[in-house]
Length: 396
Image 1 (cartoon, rainbow, N blue to C red):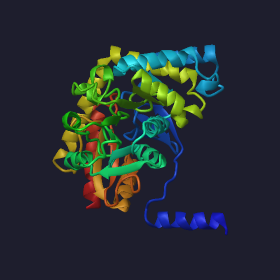
Image 2 (image 1 turned 90 degrees about the vertical axis):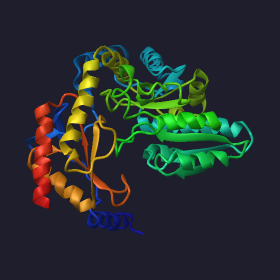
Image 3 (image 1 turned 60 degrees about the vertical axis):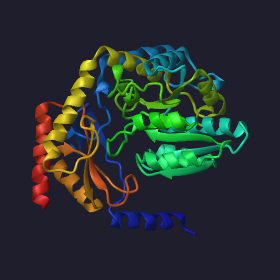
Image 4 (image 1 turned 60 degrees about the horizontal axis):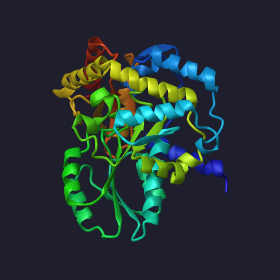
């Protein structure tokens, strides 16, 4: 068998279906502009929601830690790769999320994997029928990959369909641990989990909640502490996963929960045990980012105002879903070719916007995924809306 020939044939199929992926080489100029092929483009595709990746305080914290600890961690956390910078960041995270402890990992993907692995290990040791994961159908791929890899029972419920979840919980074996898995803010539609509904279900059925707050951290809640905190439900989730590559302006992820659960992650979370620790410089940057967000609520407020502005600009003419002040603004176009064509038209007009296609989203829901940054100006938001309207009318 010729491996390359097999792969090339499959890639050709993807190209014909307008689903082939490639990586353009860009240069980030600042948090709202990039350079592509020598052209300066206004950026509406970044998850750097607060523009903190260029914050001088955070960069200085990273540089100082690098001078002390060096660039790399040198080892996994259990083999000497755990420094004072990691410990301080985890303490700051636990205070921020109101949990007993936190465990840093190199990515949000690994954090979700480690959290699920810890649940599976604990449930398996508890006897009975093990663990059953009940997962929102639109949960992030990292969560879906993680629960499937455990070999435990997995059931998916339709997006935000708590009636179905209620029936699944009602039918659960009494000796089986139930773990409900969802995002708080969903990454493609920008809508929110029904956390109040989940709180009511917790009064009826025994289950643990694993909540991925990747796109809520820094955006919602006091000090950017998340969407659950925004609703006054900070204690609802038994375990929370946060990431730092979005509003925090860094990289990495963390599992936040009780001290006992976090010790479980360290002991049974294979994604943690067998990974080299996140860079000490990044750990220091994460701790500083939490501090900066708490001291400068203006960026959180401005982000939500700019997000409302874009949705208002598009509301009369576009199919836009999700929360009114969420920085993720999707424009559903159905077919892959439509999304790619419109993205190219906007690029020609000086805007960088992502075209998202299956399998990242369900078939028939290809879209432009626009994201807002707190540093965008009102004029830039207006210009995007105007140029998008022109491109849509030209396409029609």
